[in-house]
Image (cartoon, rainbow, N blue to C red; front, side):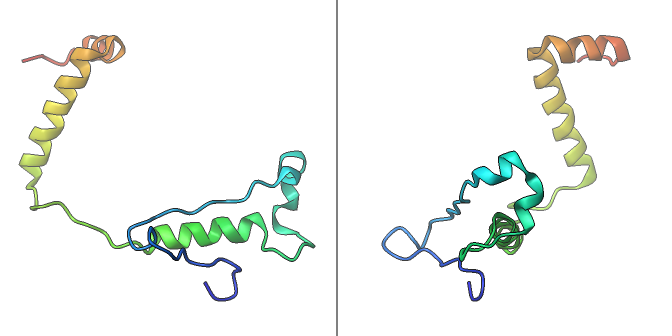
Amino acid sequence: EEGTGVRPLDGPAAPGCNLFLLPRDERLESDPALAHYSLSARPSYSVYSQNLVAQILSLPRHPFARTLSEREWLQGVGQAWEALSSRSSVLADLRALLAWPSK
């Protein structure tokens, strides 16, 4: 990207590759205030992380294969809740506490 010091990947893996590596900066572990101030020639961690966020938010969104009505969505959520609460003792206890009927 122009002006950020970040180059897009090139080579055989680049077309389908969504890989973004953030450099580790040991100085940030000792003093997080240094994240915005850097005297080095390379961009700071915050520049890299902001660039990553921008790239993630700019990715194309893929909607569901078909649209769901509220009723279909609610039925799906109910089925997911049934499956999860039957396998998890914590959710089963929550279900009993809330006195939700089981099918």
